Image (cartoon, rainbow, N blue to C red; front, top):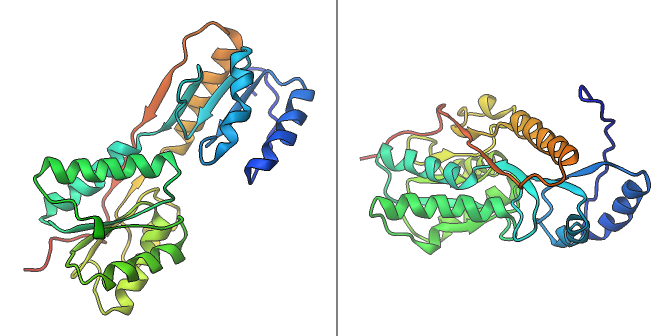
Length: 250
């Protein structure tokens, strides 16, 4: 708005909602489009013809594949690495992870960071300790129950968002596991309630305000210079140490 643009917003909860919303936006002769997470399903396909025609498009939260679009997103691979490496540095050698949906880019990258930290330090990657959820606390609870049911020993969990971390802690307590005395838990996102959990959650803080600001600036620059080269911006998450982690029990 400071640079003279009027903002229109719209939500497409599912892929079939994209086309009518996009048609409405284009009827209003928008200068450009800032798209949130276009690759969580097939919605990105609707933007490919527009990008080829030179419409200014910036992705926020996902990277383009081959299309010539700029993007801004969290450095999820680094975040997954830092979360796992923190637990390794505390002395944990059997670390489970509760991931998000397999079709989301951030899930793939956070898993890659998790695996990289384990392999870099010579630790075995146990596929039985990799379980998936859907970002909800309930899925974190159920995933942790599955982990406990494997019979595998583990002393830490990297839950790939804070809500699943809370579900994990609830499941651990039901199983008479103390957090962090018996099992440490790290989350991701640093949602507003994370510091009020019991125990306060160690997590990675996503700099969403910076992400939004940089994505908007990239879109304005693309509108003003249609021939500029696309930019891919990664914003590192900030590690927040609280009380949900400790060295493993002897």
